[in-house]
Length: 181
Image (cartoon, one colour):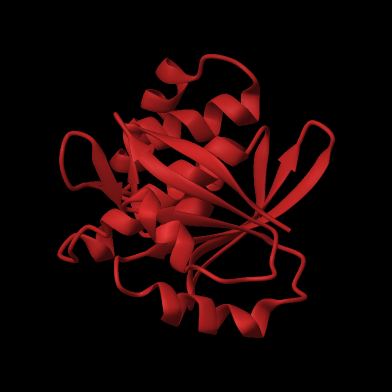
């Protein structure tokens, strides 16, 4: 039997196919931005139906993935990159890609005043010089880079001519700092 998925379910699945993992709260946030309101109950119904037709699988009470990826380890860096993406998206993700070194996640999001192109680079302490060198290939791609740092002192060791910001985890959210250009 063939099941028809809704546009909202297709949206969640399109993001999940790229990110491979998602928190329930991230799915709710995606639908909230899409619908402009409180989508908590609608997201639960949407996810419940996707589970029922075996399009998603729960890893824990809070984490979901695609059924074929249930045995894969959870990519915490991707979950963090998704949090940053959601912070920078006002309405909808239009283009999304992953694993384009040094970026963890690249996306174009719809904003209230147009579109924004972003890339999230997770910077492990000690890898700042490698990340800076890898960015030389992307100097004219039009993206704003968000460097996800473990500690603010890493900021001084990242060199780029690209427009950028720094994000630091802070009590379950992120604080953003201007990086220049």
